[in-house]
Length: 87
Image (cartoon, rainbow, N blue to C red; front, side, top):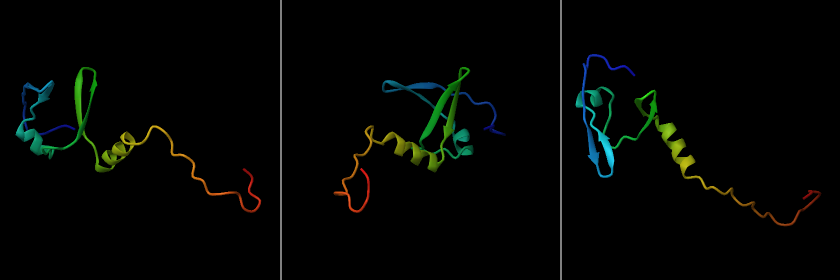
């Protein structure tokens, strides 16, 4: 996304525990409607850091996929066959 009428901004990388943090200038955050606690994704392409907000639907889907069990559910037992079912 291209940000218009904000101008050139510089920021610093800061230490945050064992990680590093990137400070986002207020005007940039405001123009993108970024809020504290917002979950984002990021990737690196051609030595460029790309930061994205994911839609609510995407976040829910990723949450479901990340918390799914590794083993499939066991088959339910429905009792002995009745009628002409073949097992």
